[in-house]
Image 1 (cartoon, rainbow, N blue to C red):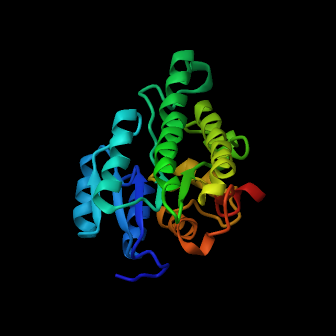
Image 2 (spheres, rainbow, N blue to C red):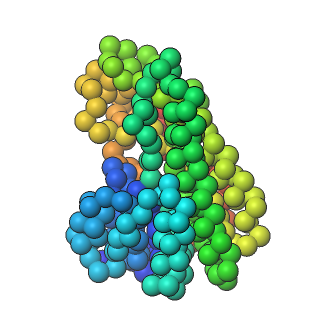
Length: 257
């Protein structure tokens, strides 16, 4: 175990901590000596915690259930004494998510916005209430997206059945500005809040989509989950004690092209 960023006494909650990106974040924090709480409703969360060692723990949590969210942070503080960082990497959505614009219903829109943006609000609020009572404050890292910064390029989906859901753009833009609000409101309490906005992350997508996406990216490839870990470690550590309200695009240059 390497305490590479002074995280050996650090307690971090990672929502969606067993997911595609979240599992790499959980592993990266653990490798740097942090105590990690994987907040994930899947069996994979328990399995990952077992793999990563005694300082990694799983709490079965549905982040769309406010009672479960409150219990998550109460349990974390009771068990480990405090919470130094929250990383919101969960990706809650309903069964209708992913429909093309013409097929999105008003009810489906409302539910997805509530599930995703709503859960980011409430997890951030519950974490912040704990951090405000700590002399050292804390750090909140929320996940946005390049499509919360700019409109989707629909040409990358040509020839595939894929699309970029309309809810996603609205949700991720909302996450970015919610995080700015948190940074402004909580700054005097020593609580920092920042956003990471990844570009497309490789997940065995349609080959034509991958090729078309990579053609539009200056670095010529999609992100791998491991590419996201370094910026997270920076934002939760003391290397970024004067960084708040920022959005870091981890996109291989997509947003500059």
